[in-house]
Length: 110
Image (cartoon, rainbow, N blue to C red; front, side, top):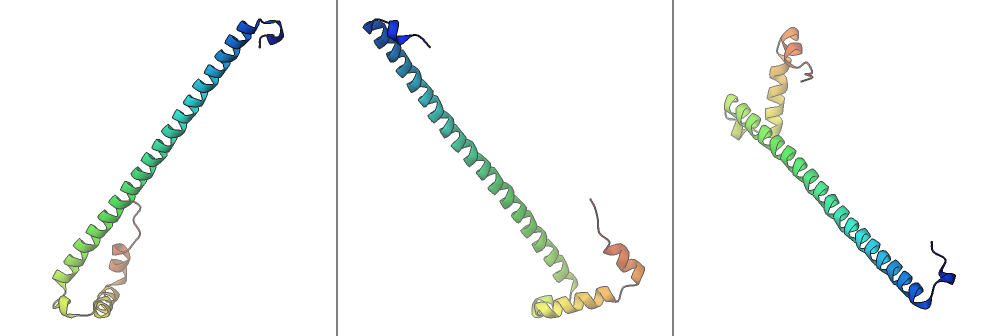
């Protein structure tokens, strides 16, 4: 920092004017960075929402397709209640031989 005491009035005024200009520039950079940060945070939020929505759409599609497959295999499925369908599926799965049931319903890691 310069020794302001040894400056002339004009030099001190110019020095302080330069400091004020630098402060203003710095404040502008800070404001720009704050706005840029807000934009980036909003972009992150938008991307996260899109990913969540895509996952929900995939799940909904999968449930619809699998429900349609089950309905096509169960006679008069549209006339049966949800509990009847559930009971029927549980009964069918329970009637499978143990080894077949275990191999069909083992957890997959892929």
